[in-house]
Every structure is written in structure tokens, then in C-alpha cells.
Image (tube, rainbow, N blue to C red; front, side, top):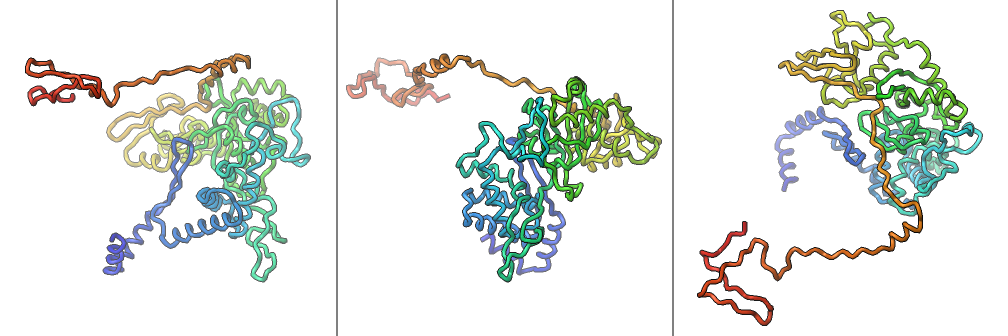
Length: 496
């Protein structure tokens, strides 16, 4: 009935329906939302119905084709991999046949080794990537090295291996004349040559996590914390991006910041042709005390020695942060410092990453405000515009600003620390001896079930009426308990 009413309305006034449709298209948008379990949802609103239908049909057709080709993964998982691969660029420029080939190759690789690096801080130097197999996908170790034969478990790691599968040699789809003609994005000879996944954005992680000294969570700017394994994998994918370092004091506050052009030895390099906008940003977090301790024994760092030495060298140089205070816009080093110091938009309650925010003068530049670090803050476009509508920003102490609303309410905001203190992991008290563990495992504890009341008992709120001389109780030979006559209206007790 609802669809019939829609058709009647469209037929009654086609001009009105078209104008309503065009107005709705002006509100179209795509947004992402993170869930508490760490996953995210991508939604598109007010999309053109013809393009949305075509997109869904193509994703479903590719998934059905991959299923018929022998991909033993739930169909919904295949649709998800195709959808994300087309959006993040890892499947860009491929026709349907090449996409199916990539999915099959990724599924086969998903049953291999764990996609993570194993180069730890040790006395052994890490060999160059060209002298041996990839240290991340080569001879790894660990209890999670093999994914097993569960199709659902394989589907969870297919998306992690699509990048590597696309970069390998993928046969092109047959041409119109029966030959093997290269499609868009394929090199001569019918072999695929590119299709790297776009960067996830700004990944923040401690250096100790990257060298496997701990498994502390990282952070994906704008999306929240991520587990250590995912942080390492994202750093690997963004190895050709901008690598920043944040040296912090004992309280986790920023002491020195900069960029480094060094990378850990043995890590595979990304393609140089990747646009800078798709390379992403990596923020390496390291305490000052740990940096000095590592600086005293660089040979023990193995493949990380050159990178740590470069950070220590820049730390000892005089910091040129502010520069010309009369510049209208902050230079790159100053802008980077403000973004790393503020972390997010400085407006109260705003979680927009500072890297995607604007650099705002606390004391307006038009009123003589200097372009220096203590007079700059990160403010997203929405909150930056609030200052043009009556809001004011003042700085009480360095690192803390106060937003003042049009009604005079004051909202102090402090910059969060770079390295936040985390609780120590809870280690259960387990006996060390195997015999004691086996003995405790053999102990059988008998637990008696707790029964509040049975079906034959009266309800808990029942109160037996006092016996009267006129009423007599008699025992039932069948039930074995005293039967009570039904109470009169005056004796009825409400159940509350």
C-alpha cells in the first residue's frame, strides 16, 4: 500500500516530485561512526537512487562471482571486502574478474603467517628487505600464525592481505578478442601494477609497541584507540607517509617534536608514486628517559638504530619553532607542533583531530596577535566560526585555554597528554607447578542448587489466614499437605 501511494503521488505532480528529489540531493553526505567494540559504520545519506542501486548491484555481482569461483567465505563478508576495497583504493582500476582474482589470492594468503613484524630490540641487525623474505610475511612465529580452516576466521583477515595481493601479479581479464588485454591499472603483459590502499589517516603509537616490547594500544586520530597489532599493521601500510616523533617528559607532555626520514631496516618500502595525500601520518611516541637510555646503546637496537639516532640528534639541536611572529600563517614546523600538542580541537567537548582542524590565533592576528606557539590553538572549522558569532577564547596558563560563550559561561580546556598513563595489566595468581595446576583441575566442587520456592508452594507474598472456629482444615491424602479453603473477600491479602 505504501508503494502504491508513492506511485500515485509521483504521477499526480511530477514537477513537485522532481523538485523534492533535487532538494534532497543537496543534503547528501557520507559519514562514519565508531562503535564501542572497535568497529565502524559507513553510511551515505540522500544519495541518488540510480547510482546507489548501481553500486549495490555491482558489489553483489562481484561477491556472487567470487562465491561461484570457489571463495569459501560468507557472502556478506565478501560484499564487505569488495565495498571497502573499492572505497579505500586497494581495488581501484580493476575490472570484476581481476577483483575476484584478488579476493581469491587474499583468501589463500589469509591462511598463512600473521601479518605483523617480528623485529624486536636485539643485538642482531635487521637485514635489508632485498636480501631475504619479507620479515612480516616470511618466517613468523607465534600461536596465532595460522588462521585455521574456519571460513569465518579467514574472512576476518582477508581485508588485511588484500593490499599485498593486489601488489603481486594478478592476471588481467580476457580482452574482447579473446586475448589477454591489460585493463586500467595493469602493466603490459596483463599483470597488475598498483592499487595500494589509501592511508587510514594519522596513526599514533609508542615506539616500544612497534619493537614488540609491549602491546599498549595505539590511536587512530578521530576514531579512538586501536589494539597493538592493528597499530603495527597500519604503520607498515603508511611507511611512505610522514613520520613524526613526539618526545615526552615523565608526565606524558610534549617536549620535542619533528619529522624523521629514516625507517626501520628490513621494512618493505611503499611505492614512490603514491600521492602524498594518500600516504598518511605516523606519530612515534617515546619518553625522553627511554630515548636517552637507547641513545647510550644504539647497536642493541638493531634495525631501529638509525631512526633512534636521528631522533636523538634532532633533540640536541636548538629548536626553531616560532620563527617570524608577524607571519599571517604558521609555517610547517609550528603548525605541526600545535597539532601534536593540542591533539584535538580545543573547543570544549569537540573530538575533531587537530590535524584536520584550523590553526587559530587566541589573540586575533588583526588585533596584533603574534603567530607563535603560545598564541595558537587548533580549532575545527565549526568551532573556529563560533568566534565570529560572539564566542571568545582566552589563555589562562600555557597549555590551557578558556572558551567564553555569549552568555558569559566559561569552559576551561586543557590539552591532553601525548602519552597517557595506563593501568598495569592484571596478572592472575596461577601456581607455577604443573602438578598443582593438574591437581586443582581434578578437584570437583559440588554445588547444591538454590531453590527459592517450587511450583507446589504458595507465592512468597502469601500470608495464611488465621484459622477460625468455623473453618476446618483437613489433610489431603494425595498432596500430603494441608488444604486451605479459599479466603473470603474480607480476608484477601493483596500481593504487594
